Length: 128
Image (tube, rainbow, N blue to C red; front, side, top):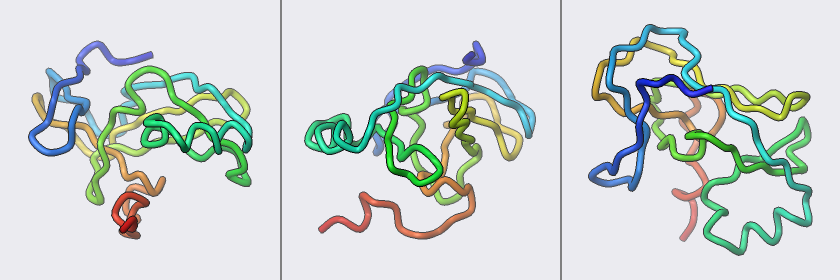
């Protein structure tokens, strides 16, 4: 399920991102997407491809990874994100929910650390 007001467009600095054509209330589930779960051996292979930038650690022990379908892998990172994501390991889904009101035309973002207010540097900021 993806709310029909969501769309993807290029941003000025982050590549593609997810945006909305209409105002969205705080606490709204805007997407629920299935994921393709891969084991540790698969993750080693995926990490060698451009898909590395789009996978999520998966499972209670983070011993697997997944590729999310839908728009989930296109949401850009922000330390002051306006959405958060929830992983359902039993149903193999990821849900995106707004944490504040979103204005029409605004980009929807998530914090890649998993907790919307976690300020720890994300993986791509620690490389180099």
